[in-house]
Image (cartoon, rainbow, N blue to C red):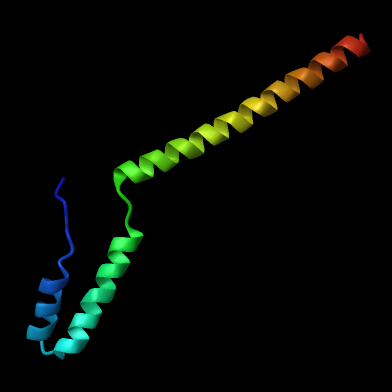
Length: 80
């Protein structure tokens, strides 16, 4: 899989060569670079946070299962 890196300078130069004003092209490239760099996550970051969420979910399900078995045990003990 190829890694794509956004190059703001190249992008700005392409916009300038297409006829856009240099200042506008620079601002456009800078803002697009900020959006890309702030909104994308790495696989490691994604996996780490996904694992954390999965662990939290498993703990909740485990807790509910223990509580359900406890309630069932109490009901069977006092009902029979």
